[in-house]
Amino acid sequence: TLGLLLSNTITAFAMTTNAAKSPRPIKNVVVAIAMEAEAMPFVEHLGLKEDKSFYASKTPFEAFRGEHNGCKITVVTNGKDSVYGTGVDNVGTVPAALATYLALEKLDGSADLLINAGTCGGFSAKGAEIGDVFLTTASANHDRRIQIPPFIPYGIGKVESTPVAKLADLLGAKTGLCTTANSLDAHDIDELHMKENDASIKDMEAAAIAWSCKLHDVPHFGVKVVTDIVDGDKPTNEEFMENLASAATSLQTALPKVIDHICGKGHDEL
Image (cartoon, rainbow, N blue to C red; front, side, top):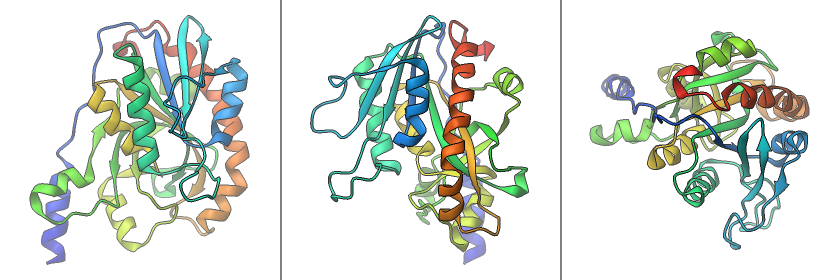
């Protein structure tokens, strides 16, 4: 029955994969950003340079590298679609997981922290407003519905973010769980699972990036700017496009502050 399935799902959601921890001071940071429009203001602000040799030639992913405040910074984006011939940004979980995994593999254990930066939808019921900056406390999936008991926690895939309470205070940022799916919109069953995830924000990449970070045992968290209200009245696609440019500007403002705060610190000082 639906009640039993929901009970199993809620029980499974309590099964959480803890955040990775590192004893090293933070000196090498990866910033994973899905869309070019979200990434380029930050890349230009820090004066990072494209490294065409970072990824294998057959991948669409892009990397921009440099130093800031004593830290090595690598910004990776998902690049543009060539498989389907659309030329749009490679959004979604598959390119995000692969771009992140390959970046961390390339750095061969030297990455101290990964930041998943970008835009998100927010829930007004959780106090989210357009333009808010959120730092993630965890990530999970709301569209991997596998109602076979052993697979339920795998489908949800909840992974804790590294704690960043001091950073949240510094930025005046809100905090909460980011729930992920491969669709921009959300239907009734999605909304039900997002509520079960106790989500404050939603995106199309966070849970996938967290999965790759966990495989490499690299601590991570998300910095997300709200472009649309999931439980609001406006169509998601219209609200997202309307606010994308201003959200990218907000990211450009927030991310250098994030880098300045974390560089050289231990993970227990964030």
